[in-house]
Length: 112
Image (cartoon, rainbow, N blue to C red; front, side):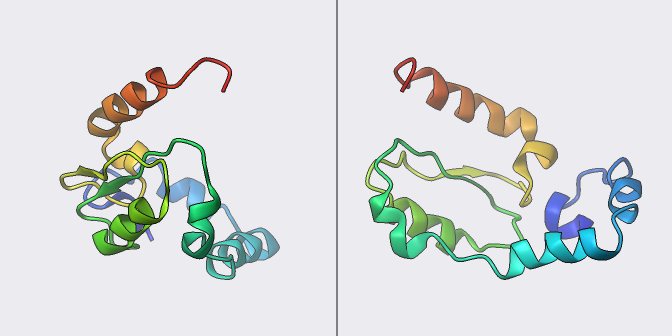
């Protein structure tokens, strides 16, 4: 799980926390991930501005899936790829991902 989420980033601080998740709580978390509906079929209904960051080392979703999401979102910025980034970009490559997110958020009108 750590490899999928964090790639080659240091997972030593997260593994003990993940090991504490047991029983029904773990089952609910996994079911929420596995059984959820996808958004791609309805992405065209999302009118809000969007940014889709994607790590090139994401083992959970191939880049083609991120490209499809960007194409389906009517107000999406071009796909942002983070070289070597894993699925949890905010943890594995925060320094690389944060400037893109900050620029995107700063460009949005206040209160919208």
